Image (cartoon, rainbow, N blue to C red; front, top):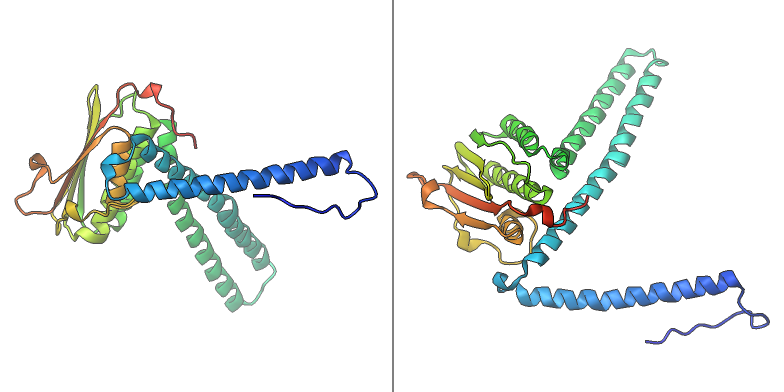
Length: 282
């Protein structure tokens, strides 16, 4: 590939600023082209691996989920710093305008619109808490789970029973986030698809691992129908995330089974020597 340029002022040489600008432009174009070829090669490798998940390196899974979590964090910050702040500013302007309006009907309509704006801002705050569970990054997995359970109990039509052990001090942020996302996905799946009336969820730790157990009495699920392609969402995302951290996922484990059918899952995640692994930076 050859870059061709024409100097429109041949009567003089490039000055220092112009030379730096031209060199920067050429270097930037070269980096873009190089990365484009590397990205295309990476996507071809992904396509080759899609049919056999066992060939996917665990480091690749960790890398994909690190990208996903960073994007969630950036998006949540953007929503908070732009959309929510803009809506709150509009509400404050409406409060100021109300002081200058005497017509009762107009005041009532403005007050109704103001309440709707604040409701939307509150919904966005809830969305941010789901996208970016800040408690986890302060080492408080149990607190993040408690907040999630409260939100589920307010909107779910099933009875949720939980048994959560105290979080060990050596649980890494990556592992804590992995367990939180698994719980989040399982409860979301129960609300949307399981058609269940009871859900039981337990999280226990010992010196070597954390064990997340889940079961419901819903319509059940065949693990063989899992989409084998790369995904950071859904049950496929749970499997990829757990395997990326050296853990295992068992569907319908016998000890968790229910005579009435339903769906059961058990995640076993190692937690030892996590201090040697680079933490997810968000």
